[in-house]
Image (cartoon, rainbow, N blue to C red):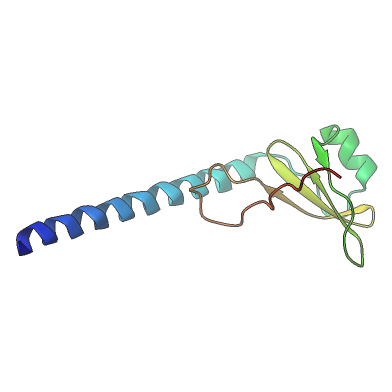
Length: 109
């Protein structure tokens, strides 16, 4: 019986290690992709971003003070304070990738 438990624990441990290795690989791939993908630069205006990258797939309303706006593109998200870019981040490659997750979409009003 102890041998069966030892085998079961070993198999489960290997599964977790393999799962973590897969997630780490996806994260590394996303970091590599970020190095080659052009993202909006900090300080760019909304007009400059739209002229360079086209219209976003979704524009979120501003929230907070100062107002922070989020534009969503298929592979990245751009955050604005007033009319200027403060950050641009790649969207996760999959649900198993470790790292920050995009905020779930709210139903339209």
